[in-house]
Amino acid sequence: MIQTLKNKLSHLYHATRIYGSDAGHYISHSLMSGYAKSEYAFLRMITLRAHVVEKGLTMPHMRANFGEENILALIALCKEYIKAKHDTGHTLFKEALSVLCEYQRVHESMGKSIPPLIATGIRELVNRCPSIEQHSQPEVRKSELFQHGDFAYVAHHRHSVRHFEGTIRHEDIIQAIDLARTAPSACNRQPVRVHLIPHGALFDRLLSLQHGNRGFGSDAEYLLVVTASEEGYTGFNERNAAYVDGGIFLMNLLYALQYYAIASCTLNCSFLPGEEKQVREALQSEDVAIAIIAIGSCPETFKVARSERIPVSEIIVDHSAQS
Image (tube, rainbow, N blue to C red; front, side, top):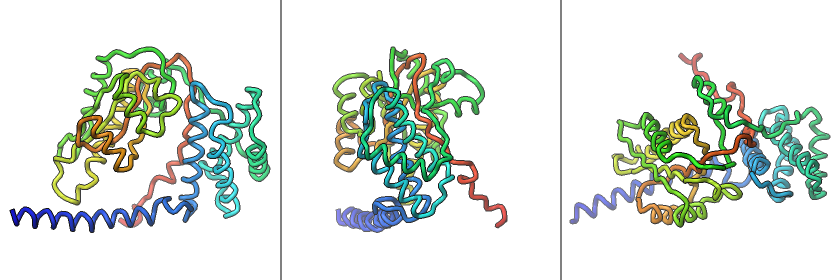
């Protein structure tokens, strides 16, 4: 008994030290401070807000003048970015301005006016950056989205879908999950579980706890909740391993759903402890939540978010010269 208590106290001490170090690093390097410490961070703040706008522009029942507070904040961030003399030719900055212009253009096509503060802010940004390209959120065809091809075709044509219509076969979902089992995991521990949830009380409960599905989540036919058990991991050095294994499986599952022509949209599980506890209680599981996927069939044509990608040159950190 005494030895067990000593072990628990030792584990608690090391957990406090190690997770405290994680927390300190996160607080120092994330955007929790509310301001950007670098051009990189500035661009990510801008992208976060711009993506909310582009998602809104693709909603099945787009509400006029949605997200006014977010758009005003995005305009202010873009002005601060310019004032700081950062690169206005960067892909993410240009895409944010293009999304703002599209917001205005879509409202004009609807015969709707936008608030004067927003209209003025967009005009000022366009005057400062007149070379911004005019983009729209692309419209895709179901036949193109789910066309089988080589992996490059599939990867470039996969999109998060927020338009759900019709039904999917239960056996196709099972086959997609079966195909996703090919995902690798550390030491083949395979910690992942997929909770298949049809419409009903549990479906509604989970959507109420997840804060990024408004306007489309309830239209999905099923939710897939990807979780991972921590029971197979052995030490503090593996404290994030369940999330890594779960994330690898999640991406494999998204491609598998694409293969079986099942429309999907990934919903994050960025829960606070109280919310995560409610999710575990709802699922009757002690696993960690990786992501929720809204799935279903989709119409023949619909809009998706552009979600512009940064150039590969900004992703690769080549250490060849050090060899």
